[in-house]
Image (tube, rainbow, N blue to C red):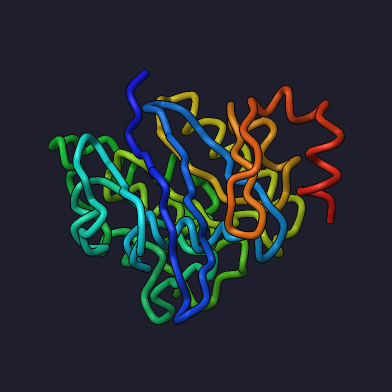
Length: 236
């Protein structure tokens, strides 16, 4: 199985403070990988470093067979790496439809599998809200919008940072369904989450991070029964 995205010994800093320590992870094509850990474990920093929002101060990052360690965020996006941040960042004074059209482009391989009609079919709630300003959406509706907006760029890999955080259970269930459907259709997803239970039906494998270090790797089915790891690194 081909790795689309791979980090080797990646370190990252906020100012003089080191946050990531020699992080290794590999995301295979058409697979969903969960990056699990408590709040403050280094999940968001890992995602930002992979996306090029933060620089890697050590190690290397490879995407689609290229070394992108020094590539800026916009170059990684053009190569097909789509990043959905935890704080959503919609264009509040533009409609739902305009937010989607802003991001519309062919994928790096020329494909355009994701179009507005397919988005409306996959996200029927957004279809009903297509004319509403994004700033007037609820938090859950905005989360659906930013996922849909990322798909409009026809990416090779989707990086999702804490997509279930702070949302009502019914919205979390909707996002879970959408991500399962994406995985079943062959999407490649890296999902950073505190909520292990949210990830169990979405991801095939999990990497556990704690204090900026990868401390465990396991398939999600096995992780359910691994009480020691769950207690030490995932218990809230």
